[in-house]
Structure formats: structure tokens, C-alpha cells
Length: 193
Image 1 (cartoon, rainbow, N blue to C red):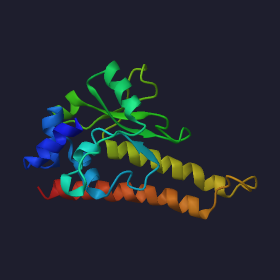
Image 2 (cartoon, rainbow, N blue to C red):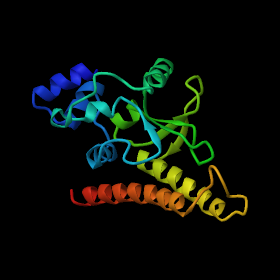
Image 3 (cartoon, one colour):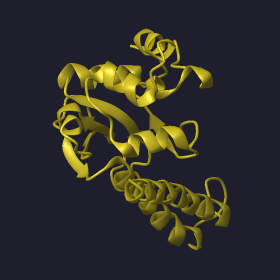
């Protein structure tokens, strides 16, 4: 798929057009906003998949990577179980809302203009609805991490190795702020059309 994407970029297509050719669907605006914001992982504690993220990197920025990372096996397993699902990200904090889930788009859903995200805990499990969009689910997940860290930082037992300090809480809040900025940028983009 990376070779196809590179060839399409060489023929002058932009990221949205490359993704449409590779997957035969137009990707949601939220996905395109995220790919244009900054290199993944956007400073977030999330393990993003190779596809489709790598395919959205234009040649001027290095293009799609030739070798996949550790998420490749998870991507293959989900694709083998349900070819309609496109894995997007693994949420690493098992204590937070949506934690331990691999978030996915349904290609049929995004092909018809939807943005609903589903989650899978294990590739053999059935996908469960998570939220109306990827940014919404990411915001809920990171807000929950922040909500969990804040009270822990003031507990008397919060000492020594692995303790949570004000910097950890501030960092968690910054994740939420980053996502909210992307959401506002997306809303501004939609309002400007």
C-alpha cells in the first residue's frame, strides 16, 4: 500500500486523493485535520497504526514509511476478522474510558459520510461503538486520564517511584487541550465552507 501511495504522490495527488485511491472512500475531515496538525503521535499517549496514517504523509514530508512498526500485526488481525474495519489507534491507558481499545473506522461508514468510531479490545472480539468521531473519542479518553490523575496526585499514598506530580496532571490537561484545538479547527473549517 505504501508503494501505491508513493506512486500516487509522484503523479501529483494530494493526501486526501491518495487515501481515496488507496481505500476507495473519502476520509473524514477530522482525519485530514489530524494529519496536517503535526507528526504523529501529536504528543499524545496513543499508539497510532501504520495505515492509514503513514499513507497520508506527502513525499515533501518524507512520504509513507517503507517499514511498518509494531502495530502491523494488530492491523492485520483486525483486517482478517473484518475487512470493513480500518484500525486507527490503540488507547494505552487501561484505566481510562475507551482504554485498551483499538479504535477503527468502518470503511462503509466513512464512505457514506459518517465518522462513527468503533473499538475492539481483542481482534477476535466484536467491534463496539465508541463515539461519533475519532476526535470525540480521543477527547473523552484523554479527559478521563486527566480526571483520574488529578485526585491521585494529592493522595497521601502518592509517594516514591511512580508517584503523580503536578507536571503529570498538567501534561494530561495539555493532551485534552491539544485535541480540543483540533476540534475547534475542524469546526472552523466546517463553518468556513
